[in-house]
Structures are given as C-alpha cells and as structure tokens.
Image 1 (cartoon, rainbow, N blue to C red):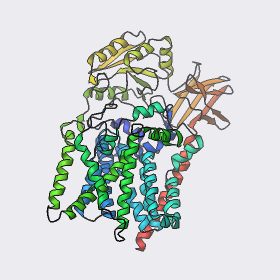
Image 2 (image 1 turned 135 degrees about the vertical axis):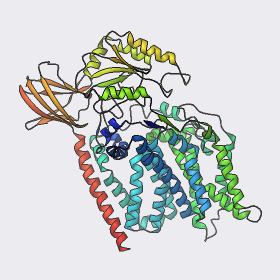
Image 3 (image 1 turned 90 degrees about the vertical axis):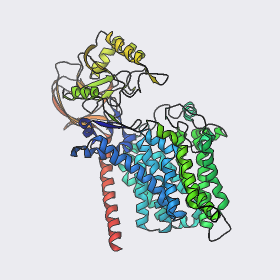
Image 4 (image 1 turned 30 degrees about the horizontal axis):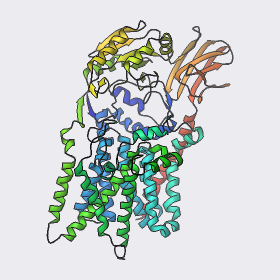
Length: 628
C-alpha cells in the first residue's frame, strides 16, 4: 500500500476511511481524538473529507482520493485563479498571465503549507484569486446570476478555512471602495445576497454553533505569549515573500534571510512607477495596481506579527478586535502578499517589456525572471519533502490485528499516535495528548505507574498500549534526529508496569495489553445487562435489563452535557462521571433507550436548509443558462 507523504496530512486505511463517509456529525469520536469531543466548531473542516471519503466505497484507495480530490484541484485552482485574475484586470497577454499563476502557486508560503500537509489551508489559499475574480465580474455585471456565482466561490472558501474567508472578505471590502458609489447602489447583489447564500449553504454548522456556543478556540489560544511565540516571520521575510520555515518546514525552526529574495519586493513595488492616476484612460487599472500594492504592504506588516517595526500594533489588534485571535499564527497574512505580488510582478515585467521594447526582447526578460524564480526555489529540488512511500508492513499487520478482533476498544499510543496507526469509530486511538498530562514517553510511563491509572484506562475501554515504530523519524527525537534509545526506553519502561502484559510485536511496534477493559457502555453494577448498537457517532440504541432505581449507565466518551438518553417516557441528560458521560435511570426494570447527541438535530436541520439552497441555486443557474 502506498502513501503520499505530504507533511502532516492524514493517511487512511481502506478499513477506516469508510467510517468518515457520512453526513457531517457534531461529535468526533475518533478523527481528532480517542476519547470523543464535540466537533460543532470544526464541522466545516471535515465536510470535504466526509464527501470525498464516499469514493472509498468504489474501492478507490486513499492515495488516489488524496491525489485526485485534494492535491491536484488545489494546485489547478490556485494557478488558474491567478492566471484568469491577471488576464481579467491587467492584460490578456497569456505569457504574463501564466507568470501570475506561477508566482501565486510556487512561492515559498504556498509550497510550505501545501507540502506541509495543510491541505485545507492550501485549498482556502488557492481559492482567493477565484473569489476575487467572481467579485470583480459581479461589479462589472451586477445581476442575480453573477451574485450567485460569487456566493458559491465564497462559500467554497469558507468550507476550507474561515480565516482565509475573513481575509478575502476584508480585502474585497477595501477593493469595493474603489467603486464606492456603485457599491452603495447595488448593495442587494453585492452584499446582502452573497452573505445570505453563504449563511444558508453553511447553516448545518453555523446554526449549531450559534445555538450551543462551544468554545470556538482552545483554552489559552488567545494568549499574548502564544501570539509572540507564533510570530516567527521578520519584516525582511514578509516583504520578500519568504516563509520563515522554508525549506524544511520544521515547526519553530527559522532560517537566515536569503538575500536573493529581496529582488522580489523590488520587482513588485516598482510597478508603482508605471501607474498614472491623471490619465483618464488608465485610471481604473492604475487604481487597481495601487490597491494591490497597498494590500501587499498590509500583508507585509501583519504577517510579521509582534515583530518590529511597530509590533505593538498587532498586539493591540489581537487584544481589542473580536475574532482577531483567529490569526494567532500571523503567517496567514502571507496570502495577501502572494496575491498582491502575483499581480504586481507580472505588471512590472509587462511594462518593462514595453519600455525596453527596442532594446531587449520580452522573451529574454521573462526567461531571466523564470531563471531567477527557479534559482530562489532551488532547495525544493534537493529536498525529500514530496515522497511516495510504501506503508511499512509492520503497520499493515497491526491494522489487521486490530480489525480482526471486531469489537470495541481503544488503543493508547506512547508517546503519541503515529501517522500509520489504525483508528476508527470502533477502535479509537488515544495519542494526541488528550488524556495524559505529560508529553514525553518517560513522564507518561510515570503516570501509568500510578495506582489510579489502571482503573482509568479500564473505564475508558483501553485494551492495548502501543509503542510505535517511528518509520518517518518524527516521534523519538533528540535535537530533531531519530534517537533509538528513546524508543528502547519507552518499551523498557512499559515492560516494568505490572498491570501491562506484552502480547505482540510487529517489527518495531510493541503491543501491551491492559486487563479488564470495559465496553463503551457499562455500569458499576455488574448484574446489569447492557446490549447496545452503534448507529453513528452521535446515536446509539441500548437494551437494558435488570436496572435498579438510580442505576448509573456510563457512556465511555468525553463528557458533554448535550448527550441525552431518551425513550417513550424518559429524557435524561448526561451527568459527569470521572470526566465521562453517564445517565441515571429513575426506576427499576428494563429499558430501551436511544442515546443521542442533541446538537446533531440542528446539524440535520441545517443540512436540509443547505441542500434546498443548493438545489435552488443550481436550478436558478440552469434557468439563466437556458435563457441565454
């Protein structure tokens, strides 16, 4: 089995990808956690995964799904969006339009996020020129059809990343000021209709988010110390469109400035010498160039975060503007620089070629720039960032070992889950630092040695504790290099824990078994009989026999008050039991219960609204097409 090793992007097995081929759910039982968490505030980010996962039912492996629906579309949309944007607002010259596409698609920012496996971010970035293009077309042809097309492009971008959606909206707002009178006159089509359509298409997650108000950001996400830590880029990096982590893309590792990149801002901002705001024939294009120059400068200033010059400005914005904490990682503002430079640099070269027409061929000018651009990116050609790898046989055997047991249990990975580790809604994997307080293998093992650990893991249905084979050199590291001694220490440490039994080894993967693990539903009363059926991550059906009054049923998922147990004459909300859910039954006897996650009802309502809206949009566009 093959895997396209693209940074942190997920790998899925044929056996587990089908678990994610469903409508969006408000509860995540295995994708980003092993113990279950609300996904109300992240449904948008998994919706495209849910959609593309359906192709697994056709026998298409994740390697192909990833390539066809994630990687190739992001590259094509980024390139073609920039190509047609330049053609639409600057010049129909194909050569310079191609150059715009190349700059937007192959700069160090996009390559860093794309090759780093941030495919949702890469998709949202790729859609920026397309959204701009549809907006400009709306301004030129202000009608319902153009408004709908713009709304669809904007909605698609929101599907992948709300931060880029907000960045694009802000940029479009300032762009519209170039035509303020027109903007006010056509408020219905330019503002009201697009925002309404975006809301309706995304109502399946926006409505639950409004009603249940989960913590949208993790605790501490809006801390000033975190912002300063994530302000990796310096002014010289941002103005040169040089990502601070280029080329290795190791988190927290920044590199010295590469002087050749200073040519890039010179080529971009020299475009200002070619505009003429007094020439009525060229004033519109000149104002567009001035806008993109200002957009680029705004991106340069904001992408450096709290670093000088005037780093306190970003701190003030972070602390005083609601929602600005979404940009704790200021490098998202690199997207504004990339969009700006993809317009400005071809414009500069185009005008240079006109100015030097008799002295130098435009082909030589373009050729010289392409040689420089390739030279600036030369490190990518000697790196091993983009790899097609064969999945280690040890992980194939581990996957088969887990799947063949065909029963619910969890696995705990020490010190963390590995990218090829098997997980599903039936066999969640704990290994993303969601359970133990420590992050290192040695400290985790100390926690496991505590008396209460055996009971905790038994209650949470942990059957196996696994030490992974670090096939990609990402886990057992010393000074960013693989350290085999750390792996051996983890294995030896677990062997000394008395309640763990070493049961299997698959290559360098070592599997320990924990005794007496409980099922997904259990009770402190051993005489109680519980049979349950898994419907989906938000719904279960239970048959309970011999319940006593005030009997407690424990649901071994992370506690959330919105879990409800109901029958024809019973409705009980979840109460916390050792950080898990539980339901107290009011009387003796037998029960037939449905356990469901309340917010999912509103997800379904939102999906109906979204589906009807999409159907009406398709009908409207088809009708307008037939009229033409």
